[in-house]
Amino acid sequence: MSALTVRQWAPADEATLTALLEAVRAWTPLDGGALLDDVGAVLDDVVPAEDDVEELAERLRGHLMRLVAIAVASEAGEDEQAAVLIERAREVRAEDLPGDHHRAVGHLRRMAWALNELLERLGALRCLEEFA
Image 1 (cartoon, one colour):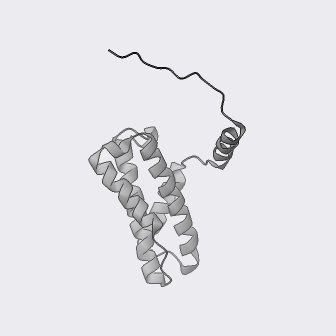
Image 2 (spheres, rainbow, N blue to C red):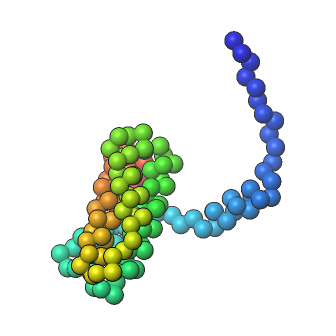
Image 3 (spheres, rainbow, N blue to C red):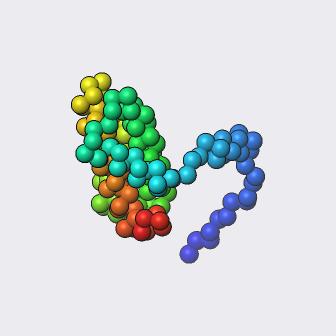
C-alpha cells in the first residue's frame, strides 16, 4: 500500500481571490418565475413583437447559461438524457439571432424549448428543489 500525500494548505494569492470576488459579484441567481414567464411569452400562441425579440433572446440566453451552470455543478451531465439537453442548450445559446423576424421567433422558440426541457430534467434529477 502506498501512503497518501497531503499537500500543505496555503492561502490563495491576491489574483485568485480577486477573480473569485469578481465572479461572486457578477453572479445572478436563477429566477424560476422570470424563466417560466419568458418561456411562456415565447411559446405562447401570440408571436412576440419584433421590438421584443432581441431582449427576449438575451434573457433566454441568460437563463440557458444559468441552467447549464447548475447542471454542470450538480453533475447532472452524468445522466444521459441531461447530457443531451445540456449540449442542445449550449448549441442553441451559441447560435446568432437571425435578422428575419419569422426566423428569429423560430430561434426564440428553440431556445425556450431547450430551457423548458432542461428545467424539467433538472427538476426530475432533484438538482433544482423548487422544480422537483
